[in-house]
Image (tube, rainbow, N blue to C red):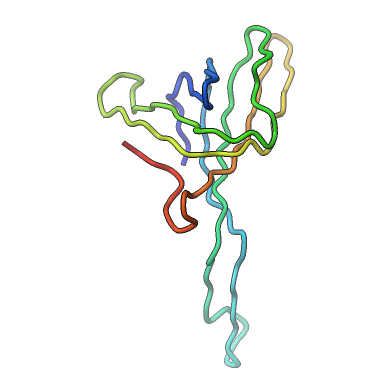
Length: 131
């Protein structure tokens, strides 16, 4: 899922401004693939465990000493809508752990990418809440 319209997000009490995009990726943590004796292609496949990674990309226009650090855990929340208006606006939130923070320096701009791992409250429920 790629969200292009959140302009800011919060991680715990920290406000993350100048958000360019948020990408939510569902990645397999474990795959089960089984083959039959009849051919070369899988006869069964399942992904019983998955990891949800959230990448938040933002433009850095000023110094920011309050950047989250790996291993920090808090609620990540942001609003998005198709046109950056209040029409069809949705709030997404998830308890997350910071996995990595990286920076890309350009000629006139700097970008920061924060990668989070979403945590399920009970191991069964979807970690991302949409309201």
